[in-house]
Image (cartoon, rainbow, N blue to C red; front, side, top):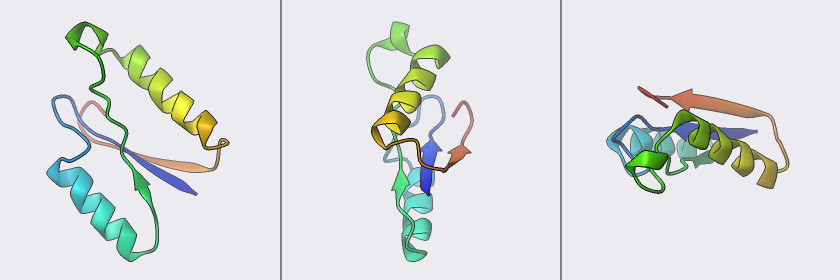
Length: 74
């Protein structure tokens, strides 16, 4: 099973929430992936691009069962 945390707008993969979830899940033996949804410039900060980014990540992983955790815009 894959667990992916989608950080909020203006946040990032090293945010306090992402770090909290990563540490807690690691204690359970679960790996957490946190894609950087802020890639590109501000004009490219669209939901469509972010959804495409996560979809491509899942495809690279072989489309495993996944749990998504979202925060704010994530």
